[in-house]
Image 1 (cartoon, rainbow, N blue to C red):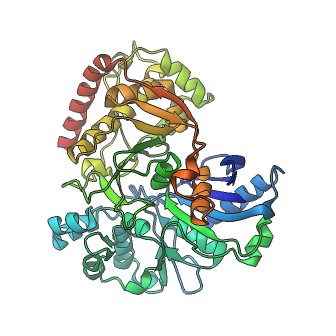
Image 2 (image 1 turned 60 degrees about the vertical axis):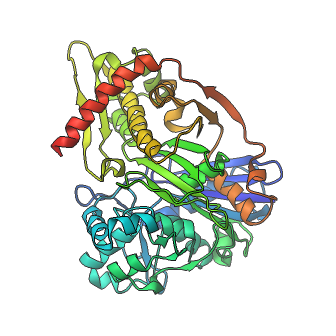
Length: 493
């Protein structure tokens, strides 16, 4: 059986077709080649058009089909990974009513803060494991308050992956993992949170049918199958947010196992079997993909300003060169970037900084000393230091990784960044050849029972390298200086 994985990213759509028997990817395709735009009508706002995702999904699937490396009719199941926390709203005809308010949008921060205080901070944390904060429920509350006519035409709310599944199948479902990601789930009662629904006065009918992550979420419609060269009726058997999916693709399923990624955003994601939470909700706990009778929770640290900053640096100062050339230039600069420090938070409100909008700051620029190469390195070191700062918050909740697994992609393609990451955090990193769309395909295989267990789906996973910290004493002073600059900035906000 062949499996189709779709990864709905912020910058592009990636698809892969995987042979379930060998777990090997037969073909992959990305669309578009250039990064998709984020619509920002006001400062701190971030939106994308769901129909754009769907157009790009179709283009990516057809691009993969055009490789001729497989017969699309042999695809037997579909899995979807997606950018987390985005709000999609549709009417009874399944037409979108507005652009999606995506993960890095900051407009609902104060709405969530008020809900946190009114519901009760201890009650919210002990039941939701999070503050309502800037998550999907609070984004919906913003729509209700600011676009009331539109709100009353909403039939169902969903996350980006639910929307793509709806377009494939005509069916709308959700899962406990997805609902917890939106901060709609009460973990003590294991049901929809009456506190959230009652406080925001949301109708329960807005919530789609709740299915397990690994289950049938609908069957591909004939018209869609004909357009994409697929077989009508094949099921969508997996849907997951990109970070739980990244953890799954790295076979991070058991308590104590930890994954990381450094794409548009940066994430450390650790598994726990306890209902733990950060008292300030700076890191967040959601139901993992294998949440069920055995409680498997994902504790997530998210940093908005990671790959987004590196991309900005390339577009601004690295014009005409590749990321690989930037990485090579950064590698020729000594550890600590000759005193240049970068605070990397310029992509909306940062949850680990109590939802403050801090911005990106360059400190100690010496016009006679610092070059582009220094800036490239200082950006990557600043991002690594942000990971250390966040990991220290996770450690307060008992998450103490002895090793972190990551895919060799995005910033982890840079030896400079990877070296800074392991030495700043003091934790070795295992790098794997992994891919979100491949993980989604294998998730579909789990859902369609092509594998005996979740772990069996990743028996052929390839570890490429292990990077050990070897220069902690050289990075630590630079980190402490960076931390002091950040805390000074936080005191000014």
